[in-house]
Amino acid sequence: MKKILKSSYVLLILLLLSSVSSCEDEKRDEVSTTMEKFILKTESLKSLSPFSIGYKINEIKIKKNNSSSYSVSTIRYDNKSQNSETDHFEISIAGNKLNISSNFYSNNYRIEKDEKMNLLVFYKNNTKEIFSENLVKNIKGNDLYAINRLMALYIELYDTSIRKMGPDTDILAKKSCAVFESNIGFTSTAASIRSNEDAQEYIGNGHPDCKIMGTDVSCAGGYNHACFSTTTMQCTGATCGGSTGGGGGWKVSN
Image (cartoon, rainbow, N blue to C red):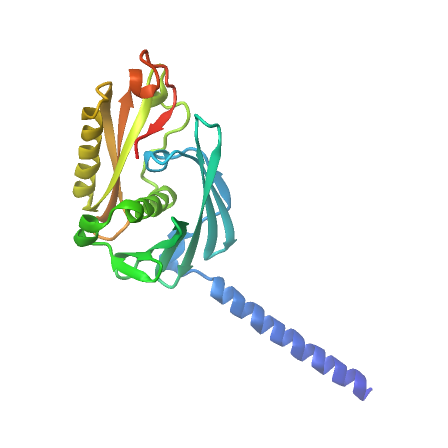
């Protein structure tokens, strides 16, 4: 009888320890009310905005690991080679911070959005810099490409006000194609000016068959700061791959 009681007691202790451990795991996965807007679900996105289409992305796949961790893949399709390329991103929510990271050109890049402080921080490996006028002025090359990709993904996933462009959008009408120019700015106005200037330069550099159709701007930081802008051009003729047009697809200049 004593052996049975002892065994039952040990079993009860083990069950209690298991329950405590399970509760602790659930707490670690909990997301605060402030950060609930950053919770995603497992799904595939095919109706995308110019922010993503500008990088030849035609599908975004989201895998939910738990309530505070996600693995995201962006699939880019090359019309000429008929091949696709997939880039992988990791998203995590911890405390009041949202992190989006990926590897580009053998470096790890990350943006961290601090909801409490209304700040956006850019990381390259172990070096960090707050998104500022100075960063916008000096960033270039691979680093600029990386921060653009990270911000474009943030906007695509979390800005519910952006316009989506499906495969049947007007810009893809027969004998036309779309070309995009993207850039960052400390404010929405600065970002918009920069991408528009890039588009005007593109038109002036041997692409007179293109015209600016509009500019989309979204900001990742607080107080309308840390912004990303994409200017869409509609083109015909040689820019679309033939002297008489008929491109019928997206073209990306960056």
